[in-house]
Length: 346
Image 1 (cartoon, rainbow, N blue to C red):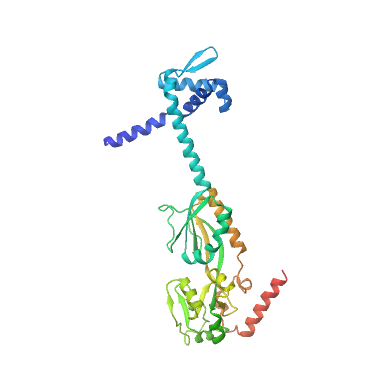
Image 2 (cartoon, helix red, strand yellow):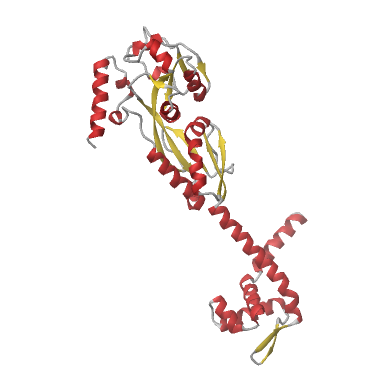
């Protein structure tokens, strides 16, 4: 065994033998020069205080107090020891206080995908900061799942088709696909009523939102996906806003732009996305107050976020049934009217 290893082992063992509780009692007695007053402050008996002082004196092999009847005073050795004990206890207290602050406030590191951050989470963050000004968010964007054992992240917001094994998972939001475009393009090329209507449009797409999800069964022979492909969902949506084509986008990304009129829906149909947004973290991190605050706030925001029109009637429906050729214009209108009627009756 190396000399360095021996020194490290000896230091660890010496810390193990330190009478920390006796040192705390010594400081309490030295501050009050009374065993009884120290016992009251520590919520123990005077006998317990006397025993701790005797233990410390035996450990150090020096007297720490001079006793004269009921009066006591620090010995010369006790006066030498006291400043160091107070510094040590103060540093311990500061370290524990810092830990409590880190648990309840300070930096909270989370990871998510860039599209969800920019279009859904970012506009809502001022509400979180107003409610929890002591919590500083550090947000990282990546499509790569977080390795909590190797990184410094506290939680992640991910799109997934199923819970992640070995972690705490809570589904926050379901997701939906819907076609959108600019108002001018819709006026020129008309709305989507059947899958055949897609032939009129240049189709904007990404690997996450392929138009193959939307086409009706049996259309492979006479239908071909055409148009510009991009490598991210936000660019697809931006191109649709600029009138470059029809985008199959996600509801969480497009809801704000639809509300502001930047894009419009090209069809009343929506398609359930096979993936959903999950809050993910190690189970033990749920004990952190700052993480609890974030999760509670996310639950509120998710509960207040509405589904797209037409989604409520389609929960649990297989995607292939949504774009079946049997769904003509009349069927689409009946479905939309049925949804509106059911909402008024609630």
